[in-house]
Length: 294
Image (spheres, rainbow, N blue to C red):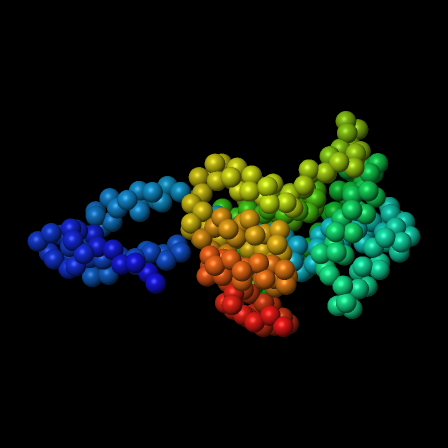
C-alpha cells in the first residue's frame, strides 16, 4: 500500500493552509494528485526531492544465468579444451560426471559449477593472460549474443532511464570486462585472476562470488556514483545474488535456482520485494515469490 502525502499543512485538502495537492512515490515515479498553482515550488522544497534529486539510480546485474543464458566461465573452459590449451582428460576426469548428473537432472547445478570452477582455476595456472584474452575474445565473438530477451530489454530500459548499469559477477575479470564493453555497461566488479610481472596466471583468485565481497562492491559503487539503493534494482539467479537483493528496493530473480527461491520464500522482506521472472522459449512469466515449488 502506498502512503499518500500532502504538500501543505495538515493531512487533508485545505487551501488556506496551502494544502491543495497530494503525492505518492513508486519506484522511480512521482505521482501528483490535484495540483494547485503553487505546487511545483512546494515539490522542489520537499525533503524527498532534496534527498533524491542529486542521487543516482543503479541497476546491478549478475551475468551467468541472468544476462547470459549459460556461464561465461563454462564457455571459456570448453573453448580452452577445443583449442587444446586444456587436455580433454581434465574434463573427462574431473568435471564430466557432475555435468552429466546436472544435464540429466539427477544432480545439482551448484555442485557441477563448483567442481568446474576449481578445475578451471587450477588449469589456468601458468598460462599467459594474452592467451586467455585471445580465447575470451573468441567466446564473445561466437557466443556473446546468447543472452535472455528479458534482461536484454532491461539493460536497454535502464540505459534509456540514465541509470547506472553495473555488473557484479563471480566470473573472471577478463571475461566480464568484455561482456560489459559489448553491452555498454558503465562499470563492473568481477573475480580477479592474478598474474605475475610476466603476465602469467599465478593460480590466485580474488573472488567476487561471496557475500562479503559483493557487499563491499555495492558499498564502493554507492560511494563512487552516489546511488540511492532504495530506488535501485538488482537482477540475479542464484544464492550468490542475495546480497544484491537485500540492498536494493527492486529485486528481480531470473529463472532462479531452487536454493535461491527457498531462501527468498523464508525471508519476509524478500518475499514481499522480489519478483520472479521465468523465460522459457518465447514466453516471459512474471510471478510473485510465494509461487509453489514442486
